[in-house]
Each structure stands twice: as structure tokens, then as C-alpha cells.
Length: 355
Image (cartoon, rainbow, N blue to C red; front, side, top):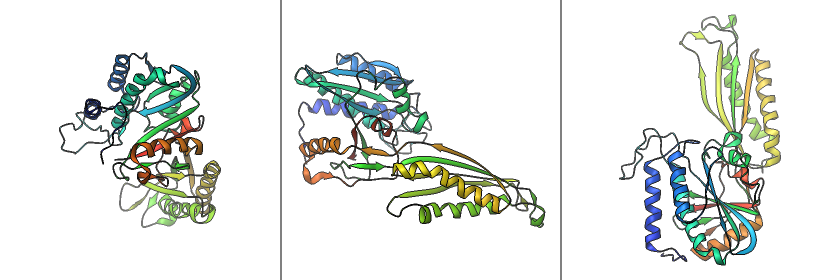
């Protein structure tokens, strides 16, 4: 299906692809997006804009002022890559060892740069302003992530946006499909680490020690009761223990054992209660088995919640571009996004673009 969009020529499409591939070849990790930010700022200046750099460490912003009075809309693209070795055999594969744009942020940057060009061209007829936000370090997430860093740097303070929109290329959707889901559609992302202290002993004499490995094993099982017996069955919750470490030899009961994992949830009220529930289960098991448990529970991204009114605007735009038959309103994932930090402060919508 050939889609013709206003003010988007073949040359502009070629430029979008070229920029994306250039960024893909030169990925940068969170808060290190120096080259990427430089390219963004240079291209914004070429459009006649006055970008601000170093916003939230390496972020870039620019304001497209409309020729008529109106509201302010924030559009955001994230810029960072992931610490992954690229194994694709393409002419534009990553040239940085151990770093790759595996999450599509190179796409997001190139898309917003083309949107910026279209907005500048139409600015005299535009009612209101558009704040372009090129954000660092989305992958870090939470209080340590790029969204919060830019918010602390004042990106929402002057002028405060009336609405915020972002998008993510989405591998689970076919090309040409757009997903716009009301309410929570991406989960909160929490990380936990538990160190269990016991008493070491020879494996042939377990009665002489206090086994932290057995304690840890019971914790892994007991934590699943948070999902099966503590949460409303209609409130989605995932508890995943992903790393276990213990011991140094086959015949020694170690002094300590360690686990790490993540909890994902959509509901804000349940999200607020989860740390206390987690602590209760872990400490209860530890006490029952004579061990000590040291818990480090870290908040990541909060749930990503789309505003219904903003979703209506996004759906209308999607239908205009791809047609009603290519619109999805039921796309949800237990993955997380730090665009949630913007949506917690400004009504908006985060879209999934089939890729």
C-alpha cells in the first residue's frame, strides 16, 4: 500500500533512511549521545530553529512556533542505544563494538527530525507551538533515566506542554499498522536484588550450617504467590527471578546466596503496594529458615498510561495516514517505557508503529 503524506517527498524519505542508517552505524549509550545530539542540533539549526543542547546531560530541545495562537504540544524521540553486540550483516551495521541500536531509537530520532522539517514548513499556518524533545538514556529508566533528567532540567516548565506524544517502532506489529491503546498499555518496571545470609558448612554436614541456597529456592517459589494469591486476578502482575548466584564448590554450603529479578504491573494502586508485599514474603521465608535477607528494591519506570482524549487525536491521525483497517486499539505489553514520566505530568499518548 503506497501512502502519500503531505510535504513528504521521495528526497525526504531518502534523507530519513540515510539519517537512520548513519545513527545505526554510530550508536551511543545513555547520557553519552554526544555525536547523536550534535547531529540533531545541526539539523535543527539548518531548519532555522534554535536548539538547546545539554538538556538533562545530552538532551536536545527546540521550539517550533506557530503563526497563530494555540496550545503547546510536546513530541519526543529517545536517542540511546543498548549494550548489545550487533551480529546483523548489513552495510550499516554498528561500528561500535558491543553497542547497537537494537530498540529502534535510531528510527525515532530520524522520524522526529523529518517531523520537525514538516512542522517548520507549515509553521505560518500552525495554531500553537510544538516542543521537540530528543531525549537521552531511555533505557536507564526510572529516576536515573533521561526523561526524569530532562524534566528536572526544566523541559516542561516554559512553556508547559498541553499534550505530549511519542512513538515506538514495534516489531510485534506488521509494517503499516499503528497501535493506539487507551489507559495503561506499558507496565511499571521494578528491579529487586536479595542477598540471603546463612552459615557456611560442609555439604556432608548440613546440620552445622544454615543453608542460604535452600532459603533462596523457597523465596523464588513463594514470590509467585504475589501473583497467584495476593493480587486481583484481573490486575496483571509478573514476578520474574532472572539471576541466581551461590557457592564456589560442589561440597560446600555457602555463607550467602543472591538473586535478582523484575516485577511488572499495569495498575498504579497495585504498583504502590508491591514493595511491601515483596518485603513481607522475602523476610518471612528468611525468618522461617533461620537466614537473614537484605533486600534492595528499586523503582524503574512507572506504568505508561495513555490519556483517552489524546488517544482520540492520535487515532484520527493514524486513520488519516494508514486507514481505519490498519488501526489497533488493543496493543499492550509488560515492557516498560520512561515516556511514562512525561505522561504522568502531561496528558498524552504513546503510539506503537508496526515495523
